Figure 1 (tube, helix red, strand yellow):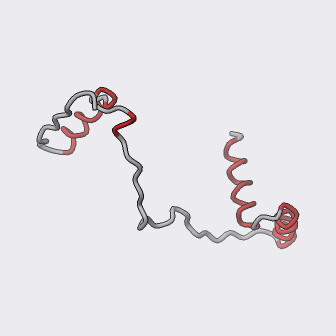
Figure 2 (spheres, rainbow, N blue to C red):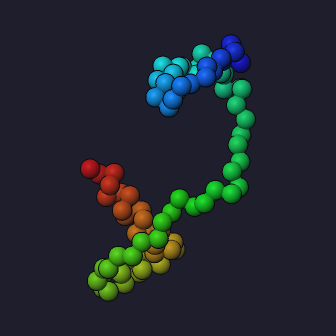
Length: 87
């Protein structure tokens, strides 16, 4: 630890937000100060959705996923991600 961080009492969230926006935590901490955290009770960040696509397209995706030996839903997710990254 480089130096002690004194956190004041805040009158409201705006004052706290202003304090943290102007505070550079690298002045107070070094990488060695941190510990690995484990959060075993977190809920998955995935969300189930329902989309309608033509049967032939779903069949093609399933065939492609089968040839790559991955679940077809994972393949669909990777296609969506690639499509968003090319923007």
